[in-house]
Image (tube, rainbow over the protein chains, first blue to last red):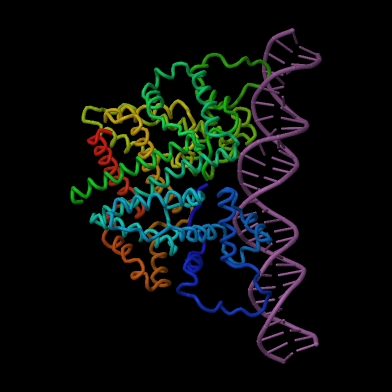
Length: 266
Length: 266
DNA sequence: TCTGCTATCTTTACGCCGTAAAGAGTTCGA
DNA sequence: TCGAACTCTTTACGGCGTAAAGATAGCAGA
C-alpha cells in the first residue's frame, strides 16, 4: 500500500500545502451558502488520527468522514481527493521533527540525535513510511526537515554531490529499519500472533519439512545461533529488538563510512 | 500497498514453498474428478507475469485467473489465498539471484557485485519491494540468497552479531534506493508525466507561491545547485539518475563503514 | 420580505477488490 | 451404473474512491 504523492491537481495541492503562508489573509470571497462546518485542518487532523490509530490501510475517506460526523463525500468540498489528503497529513506530522540540534559536540553526535528522533518519529506515525518518496510532497515541513539535516551534514565539509547521496542513504536505511518494526507490530496486531509465537511455529515447521536445513544453509544456522540479540527480559518483541539493533549498528557503520569519505577529502 | 507474508494457513503455505523438495514424488492420492487444468506453478508464473507487467497494485485474483483463462475462484483450488500466492511468487523470482560470487579479489569486490545484481533484480521485479520483510516468507530461495550474501560477508571476519545487522543495513539501503526508481517509473507510467515535466511544474509553482524560498532554505538551494547529477544526454530520467548515484555512493559509504568495523576488530 | 444564487453536504451508483457459499460438470472406483 | 470426490463457475457480500445529482442553508439584491 504505497500511496503516491502529488497526483491530481498539482496547483491546488501546492496551494493547500503552503496555505496560510504566502496566500494567507481573508478567505476567498464567500457569500451565500451554509457556513462550512469542517475545515481542511480538521480533516487533516482526523486523517492523522485515523492513520495513527489503525494504519494506512484503514485510512479511507469514509473513515475520516465518520470521525467528523460527516459522509465521505463531504470531504471533497475541502480536499480534492485522498491523494492530496495524504500529502497534507504527511507534511503536517513532519512538523513534529525537531530542528535545533547542537553542532558544538561535532556533526557525528548531532546526526546521531537526528537519526534517533527520526526513528522515533516513524514509529509514532508508521503510515508515513508508506508515503512514496519518489516524487516528494514538497511541503514546507518536508523542506524544513531536510534543511535541518543539511545543516548538520554540511558541517562535515563534504561536497554537495556526496552529501546529496548521503542524505538519501541515511533516509533509506532509517526508513527500512523502522519499517521492519512497524510491519512487525502491524502483523502482530492484525493476526494476533506475536513475533515469538510466529517464529516458533515457523522454525518448527522448517526443521520438520526440511531435515537437511543445516547442511544446506550452514552460515545461516551459524548466524542464527551466534548473533541473536540477547533477550533482556523486558517486553520488547524479538523482531523489534533485532530491528533496533540493526538501526544502532547500521548507523554506526554509515557514520564510519562518512568519516572515511571526509578523510579522503570527497 | 505493502503485502504481508505468512498470513493464513502457515503449514500449507510452507508445504507449498518447499514443495517438490522434501515431499516430492507422487501427487497425494487423486482419484475421481476432472483432471486439473491448472497447477500451482502455472498460477505462480501467471502471477509473476501480471505483477511484472502492471505492478503489485494490478495483481488481483481476477487478473491472474483471466490470464489463465479461468475465473478468480478457480485459483483457490490450488492456492489458499492471495497472500500465499504472493509468498510463492516472491520465492520463485528470488531463484534468479546468482550465487557464484568469486571471493578471490576480496570481499569488497564480491559484495559490490552482489549489490549490483540485487539492485538489478529489484528493478526487474519492482513488486518484490512491496512484499513485507518483517515476517519473512522463509522459502528456499530466500534462504539461498541469504546464504550467498553471508558467504561473502563472513570473509570479512566480522562477528556474527555485527554481520547480522550489516546484512539488514545493506538490504534496507538497496531496497530503499531501488524503490525510488521503481516508484518514479510507476508514477511516470500511471500519470503520463515524466520526472522532468513533473519537477519543472512543481519547482515553477514553488518559486511563485513561496517567493522567500531561498532565504528560508538556503542549504537546500545550495544542494540543488551544486550537487545535481549531470545529465549525460542519455534518456535516463532525472530521479532515476539521482537514485542510481545514491546507490553507488551510498554503497561506497557503507562498505567503507564495514572496513572501519573490521579495523576496529568488531 | 421574498427571490434566487451559491456553497455545503447527502444520497445513490459504478466498477473495482478478496473470498464465502452453493452448484454445475467431470472423472474415476466399485 | 452409481455415487463420491474433485475442478471450476456463478452469485453474493461488504469494502474501496469518487462521479453525479439532489436537498438544504444562508446571504445579496429586488
